[in-house]
Length: 375
Image (cartoon, rainbow, N blue to C red):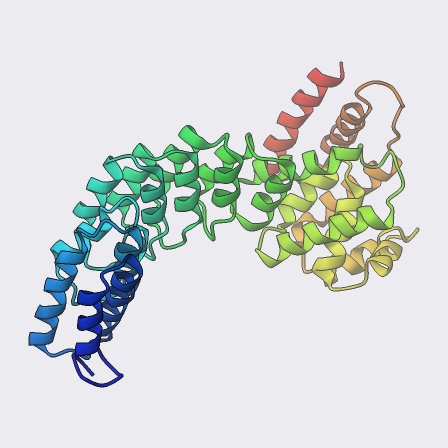
């Protein structure tokens, strides 16, 4: 391939056409053809030099489509001279492909463009396959919500705890940023817990299921989501079971369905959450799990508990919490849920003295909270 008289490269006929018909369309076609040949790597050193001279002339072309053709064809070229790559990248009307893809551009080049604070250019840089930490820091500092949302959605962006914390502090109220951050493959615990207070209920469920949270925060979020329809006041229907089973499945798949979380939920009176959780952990149908859990004797619950491979040391706590939660009643007044949970916690604390310190501290805090709320 190369400059030729044939059909495979840039021919004399192409050059003659360019000279005789210097229209925008002709120049754009020629730019695309020359740039595609250059990017293919099939040109000799002499031919590359000729191509580079043509590019430097075309960089000044008034037709956007000419410069766009160059940027599109040259965006992945490793042999493109730096000055040409940078000129194309700085082209406000045509440079997006270069900003998104060119490896010829340095971080210093890209940071300079970010500091120009043109949002489309910043967003293009945020979408690059790899965004270094210094470049990501500049984007968080100089960008807006849309730019930071693009950055947060990019798994190739080097976002450490400090940068993610800054992003939440500056743009955490924006729905696009929330969505992107929550759906990152990994989030530091501190960042996930900062997001908890600002995201929607749907995103909170995703945070709990897919990201590491402290046991206290995870338990609180689970219970908040379960309280959306004042659970246990109404019979569990198929739709409610389906929603709950989906959440439990996500928790289990991501290693979040811990014995501590399930025990805390049960201690606060959430029997449906306990039923679906132990069914999943034991790998048995929910209907079978409910039959065993509610077996009038002592063996049903113990059997499925053992099958679920939950810690034997916690079984007395589960047994006590389940019995108390099943016996407790709602009174139908204001703050009914808080009073119900308070009664369950009080009885668990008085009837089960083997609870571990972490769960004890959590339940004591919840007891204080529910006492204050329920009056």
